[in-house]
Length: 220
Image (cartoon, rainbow, N blue to C red):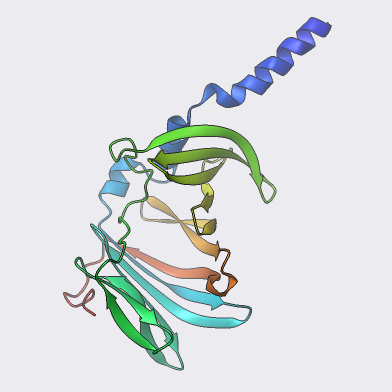
């Protein structure tokens, strides 16, 4: 009986690693819409509210288009203010000291797709680090590595939804997933970092996909 219990304990302890980091990422992509539908996604328009600090809440709009075009604006006192963006050549960000939008030629533009879409062809490797809770939910903990860059992702063990992402300078919490067309998107995004003045929470109200944007959308 004792040997049988030891065998069961061994099986349970090793069953976690029956899946690889790649298999967990692939399963997450599959259950959130599938790789084909994610690759057919060309534009995203997001509107909602962002909370900065404790009680400062503002309307927010985010526009994104392949391969890396982006624009984020918030409305303060009925005036829409662009706070960040990339036009394909240069990046732009609000300089709060001068209260002006400034151009940054060395701006690091993010890809339209997340890193774990076709991560291997991008030079990343995935490693399953084990299980860890995010709030009350058990998650697979997967580390994505490329050279010295490492990002840790936490996927819900039940539905493989991405619940948490730890980057070098920022931690993101995702929740309130809803379906838009064939794809699942988080409608709540919480960001925190060592610089507490940059923390925010976004509550999404509407997401539109593959919308044709006006030509001047990403002009600053």
